Amino acid sequence: MTALFQFEQDGRYALRRIPMIVRFNLDAIGIRFDFPAWAVLTREERQELVDLPCTTDAQKARYRQRILDMLASHAELPDLGLEDIAVDSDPPWCSTTVPADVVDTLSELDLPIPTDVHWQALSDLQRFVLIKLTRRGHKNANLQAALDEFGLNEDGIA
Image (cartoon, rainbow, N blue to C red; front, top):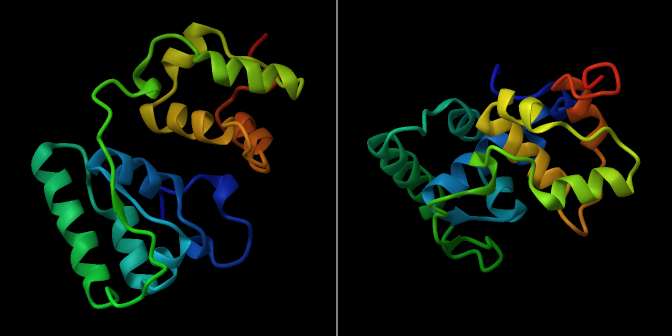
């Protein structure tokens, strides 16, 4: 399970929650689903979604179809929360500057704010994670652990 971050592995079943790599891929293919949809998938299906590549257009099409196939047998369940969303052609995690919402949330929580150079050194997935973990109304439970894992603690941002 190399695609999972350390902060996502809390000692129990690591795929209990929707991992960030899957959330990232869902945004890339224009699908949103909630925990009830994730909960109906088997362990093997969940792991497949973690491992399945989703970079090229062909891979994204396969990823999308695979999710739809996995959930097709559960289509009668009303609470799956599966919906099509627009794919952002210029997502904020591709920005070369730290988004204002990330800066604002980190500042409010008195956490280290990465410089644009540090931001650019992160992978798209790591930037996606920080954007998701700093959203308004988010509990921020894993934010400090993510900052530490990405080398963005006080020591890493001197």
